[in-house]
Length: 412
Image (cartoon, rainbow, N blue to C red; front, side, top):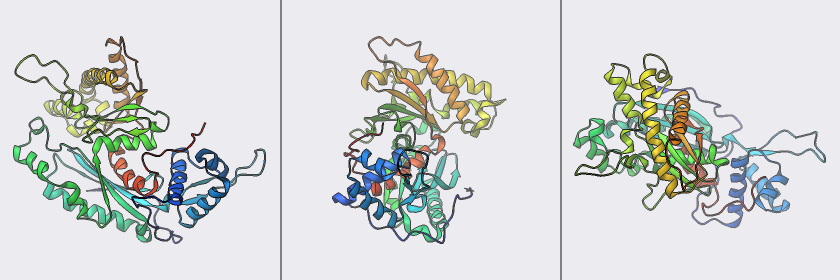
């Protein structure tokens, strides 16, 4: 188990325990509070006058709301801003110690548990690496991590609002590709993971597909602040994705929108089905190349992938994976007319930049007649995206407006 030092710890002036805010039916006052908190999360510190303009609330209502949120320990007053026309303004911002959440990412190569503060900043991280997780060993390790993260908050533990779990929908899928037995795959297919983790904690547990959770993190704290609609691609042990339309995560009927791993990469012409994107654009494939040359396969997930002796193998994989991703992007644009494609993953930032550049070149080799060409952007979150997205789920449940309601006005 790998432990990293925490950020700021518990303070003597810790806020009092939170008042309940997670009810399914919001009153108007509670809803307006959430609108204000959401505006600050999206736009950063703002004075009350700007908050009122942004949300469409009156100055009197804004004064009442911000006073209550300050009393609850959710807002902090910043230093006065001087040097402008008129009276100096006092920006308000989210109090990092106002609330906390835990995000758990369960992957095919590792599990990460993050403690996240009210601003979405990671304060503590616990990790566990493996070749493939055994459920009977993983659950006790997660229980230990949940206890350790809660203890690390000290008096602030009363402001922990929930846990979000991000995990592949088909954890036992493609087991032959991974070299797993049918029994190992079926063990994951049978388990009620959400129920098992809920049994480990008294806090409410939210549950999401791992790449959807990563897409949430990018939506709330990354490119989603500027780009309203985009296809999201995440390169991990297996490639996955998500879809954002009009600044909302589009989950689909079964919660599986953006399941690009299953995308065919050729036409079916015989009794055997064509290959899928998962076999061409996943770090699993890069692992196999490294293993064939007796190199540490874990380098696929860190900076070594772009250094000798791994580099030449990474470059060959990058060209092949980029071409497969380009085919996925062209197919995606034929169905969803979006502004951009955001590409992220659990590989190093240098490797991601190389993959993005190769994908841009590969897109030029496809026929775009009748389609709009999307802009390509690197994701901003990286390997923490899935666990961070998981942690944002309970924060959103407790403090964001209803998903169908938006701010009455947008900042310029």
